[in-house]
Image 1 (cartoon, rainbow, N blue to C red):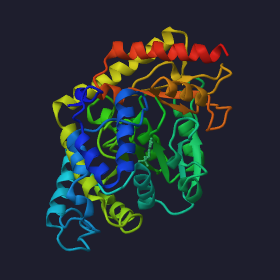
Image 2: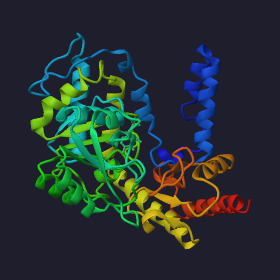
Image 3: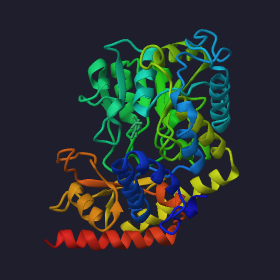
Length: 413
Ligand SMILES: Cc1ncc(COP(=O)(O)O)c(C=O)c1O
């Protein structure tokens, strides 16, 4: 279904635009323009993807207006019950969604499918095991971590005592630094996972270090969840106490989050989502998450995730062969970081110039960044969306040369 998603396929969702235009013409037109942009541009944002029409349909279904604060009856031992009537089918849906996600990751962990986003999943996951002021050891934003991993402008950096492990001179996570800081700080939680890290993360080693200092171990697989589900990246299940993810990146589902945790944390996780952080769950999104899980269980999902990685390696190698500096010198997953520190122009300049020629990516900080987060010395490049649209290695290699032309133009100014 995804390879049909290109500018020749005018049937995709067009009826919806017309429907919206009848009521709110301006909104309909704006959505249509964005749809056309998404169809015509080369989309290289590593945190984005295209979801299926089935996911979109569930997203826009009648579950959208149903209130169902609480949890389905049989699911957890502690947090039972809904606070609204008429939830018979919603309960069935949410339990089905939970079961399917456990199946996707082949786990018996507890799962909460209600977080509205990855950030909210992290907020509630921390809350389930930590008190304000507790120490967390994680990866900083500059080195590839997410805002919710301790940035000073985020709740995480304000509520918790954040410390960060470093990457080595080549950009790889420095596991000796993780061990040293863990022993020194005795954190309550060690966090692995990132938004801009192109290499395999050693979950067994992280878990061993966490255990040796009595810390909880949590992994945020928001970026690599699809790869984990398909066996393209080592799984954190069995190693981590808590695992969070988004459903809209490599998983190719609706926008949203999930929290998995060891069974003994079930009640605390559920309470930390509702009533602590959220009110009514977005049941239409939960239905779309269920569709996404069903798709992830289809054999074609594994083929897709494998191609995402194969494409990324070929794309990255082409830049290296052309003489560019790639952080860590390669990639094991769906993304890589082009280091532009040697140039006068910034990551922001390249992002803007590429926008003009229909190539969409985002500026990104690099380790030891000297520029501000609004400028940056790098760009992040991902292969998940265009692989959904049927791109193979040779297509990405062609795009690498198109980007090279733009970089040379910027460098010559
Ligand atoms: C590693 C990681 N965790 C959490 C999030 C937050 O997800 P959301 O944007 O849904 O809040 C992101 C988003 O980019 C991410 O990369």
